[in-house]
Length: 386
Ligand code: NDP
Ligand code: MG
Image 1 (cartoon, rainbow, N blue to C red):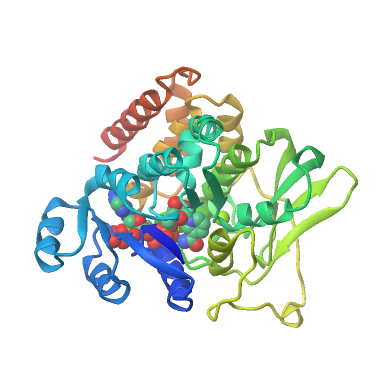
Image 2: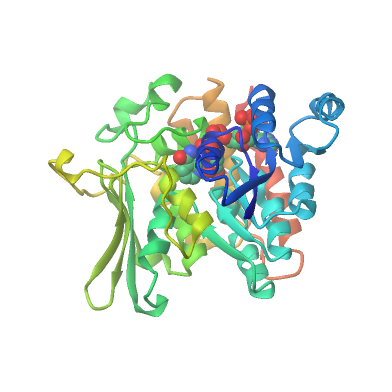
């Protein structure tokens, strides 16, 4: 029986993970859950899965729930996410909160040498170099990517050597606004940006997919997870989202992982690895339904998210932290209709241009990351939040 702790259980990834577990209760037990504001759904999950540990966003909700569920240990707030990861008795932690808020919990899980099923890409973008250093120290800890592209790369690497990789090819659906030009993007609404053609996901990542900042974050995530140079990471638009990414090896062969666009497959693999496992909720692919699988160049001029990420990644040190923090607040402001769609790029670019890079090679790397992250968030909110 594998004991699973899910951070972000009320979200899109979290509920998909619970569906997989619901279908295989002999193999998996939910030991802990976390939600932020959706307490109604969290309570349903508590009743169904009977976890021992729960983290919620606010102290008030914690106090109310503590009175109702005497056998559960409760935590709250940002700090609570790290504490639950530090104290709960689990084999696998699924980090499916949205945003860099997931960093501390991931760090605690690494220190306990657990398996981290990592959906929370912002953690790898903002603090990837630090996390990789920790992974060297805590050798038994393992990160299994959940992000579909990275799961595909991870799967395409099984049985082969990293040294034999020529390049990683990350596929992109192209997002909601594929084929649109800058002029057409000026006035797009929040509602339009939230309509993704292939994937059903949380709001933040859906907006990131429309700007292609998501693909940018994934380039940095791939660099940090697989240690491949930015010169050898390419992006290719593939509107059908069937080929989830590919690895080209030095002998010219390309290995890819394919399937219908559904996050359950990568989530399940992060639990079952190195095994492949059947689950009733998995969808299978019928190639006859696809008359075409197409690939095209990404429009980097319109969708600046890609080049901003290559630039931040190549500069390294605190620059990816800046890119991520500026983007998180920009998306929040866009969702609250305080800024326009294209302002998201302007905000990230300005934050990066003004940032004085700090070195992350020392012992104080995590403190520096946190300080930069919080400074950028405050600055963007002050300048654009009005
Ligand atoms: P959702 O917005 O659907 O869910 C986010 C989860 O995090 C919810 O449980 C939410 O709680 C919780 N949460 C949000 N803010 C906080 C906070 N401040 N403190 C504590 N908990 C918080 O997001 P997704 O499931 O779509 O994405 C989760 C992560 O997985 C992201 O990092 C995303 O980039 C990544 N990912 C997602 C994919 C997808 O298909 N959805 C694909 C690949 C990666 P509540 O709802 O209760 O407020
Ligand atoms: Mg992805």
